[in-house]
Length: 180
Ligand code: ATP
Ligand code: MG
Image 1: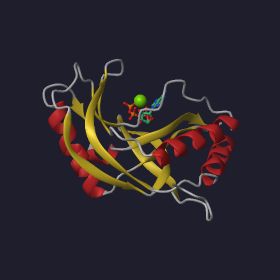
Image 2 (image 1 turned 30 degrees about the vertical axis):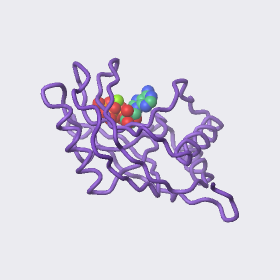
Image 3 (image 1 turned 90 degrees about the horizontal axis):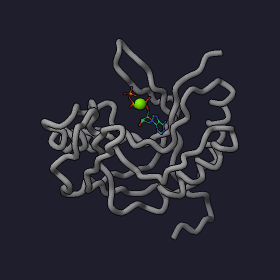
Image 4 (image 1 turned 60 degrees about the vertical axis):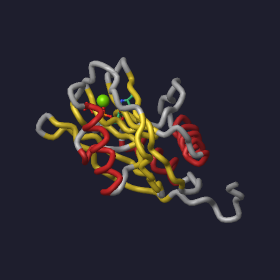
């Protein structure tokens, strides 16, 4: 059975992408290998090897999300020592982002996907193989308007990881829902 390596993520538009890349390259200088511009994303849920049946369930799970769009102010640089990655994150996490991940996770666990045991730390990986934490820790916020999320496929192209957007869903609150 053919399985695809899938995950849900939010992908930024060009200017936010370029800005993240710039901050990432600076933070990674002499420490790690910057992630390419095209690969910059924020993972919501990692599905891993997925069968066509599971993918259909995951798509139905995504279609049930009715959370409002939000603005994420990216303003901090972090480091995960175990996977050796440098990332960009936000000190303020919009409640709509938390709710989106919570609902998506619940729906996906119902499909049989393994839930994450660690608390969700929204992050954009900007450098890999980083031997130590970067020196830059904060920067003027990058304002990122998040209005949809995507099902993505991770592909190995000539030894390099590339991502393809398979399908997107809007972040829109259900009519009549109080979003305060
Ligand atoms: P590489 O080819 O170096 O692994 P990558 O980690 O970006 O590159 P994938 O492993 O396909 O590519 O991962 C896709 C996304 O899912 C990335 O954001 C990655 O951090 C995340 N991810 C991968 N494995 C897991 C996991 N076991 N749990 C949670 N998130 C994961
Ligand atoms: Mg990986």
